[in-house]
Length: 122
Image 1 (cartoon, rainbow, N blue to C red):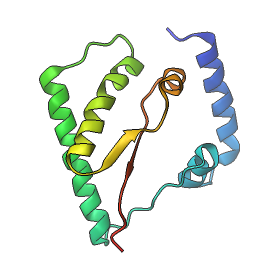
Image 2: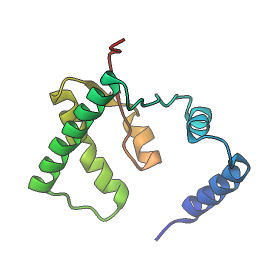
Image 3: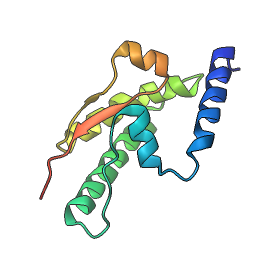
């Protein structure tokens, strides 16, 4: 069951997004978070290599998850349990991955956020 502040926040965000119809998701995310979405070019060798590596990391993390499982009552608790698996998988394939939020920020947000560094191939 959701508390009133969660429902209120959803209502505010929903209302805020209405005037954004027709504006690209990338612009909205950059405006809200300050982070730019890096475009993906299907014809780029570097982008396709990155996608291949991210798929490998995802598969590794999900194999770990399926092996050990998680017990959680809320989705936020489940996602917090998955974050270390994803971090480990990204680091195992050679990325420099770390949580992008402090523990305090994660608790208030209710979900993990991970950042990793991709060296530009060109």
